[in-house]
Length: 170
Image 1 (tube, helix red, strand yellow):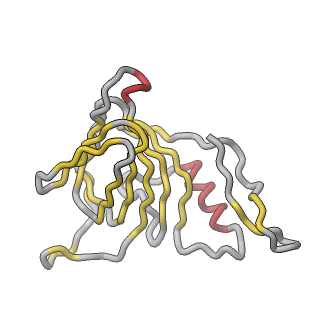
Image 2 (tube, rainbow, N blue to C red):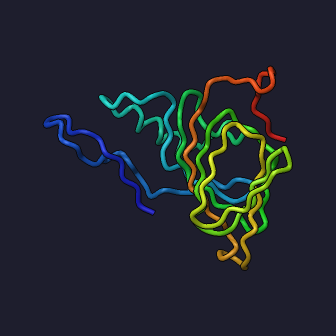
């Protein structure tokens, strides 16, 4: 998979493609499959420099902790691939995540007991909800993998029913 990031020419100010991207993208193994970081930010980026690209390259190489998939005050655009039959632990992140199923069938289960089966093209926005995912794609080998595109951003601390909500990973 190729990746391109735009920047600005230091001499003309014209839009150009950054030459900082070293190698093709690579996926990080995670317990349920793999994740590829497409771009991350830690604060609203200052586009007058390429510091945001440097920070992203560090995240791309080292990954982010699973319990904090979005840097505080930042964003994370990723490709998540779920192995056949994989199910995530119950979790809650202090984020808003927009997920689009690119391949396969996944079941999203909420702590309330509500569920949705998501198929290719479906989109769900998770607003700090306690949830779990399960890959229900049929097929052997690569055919049984599910693929989701996600854009997530950190959010301000919030309360539900008068109680401060914390990140959870059970």
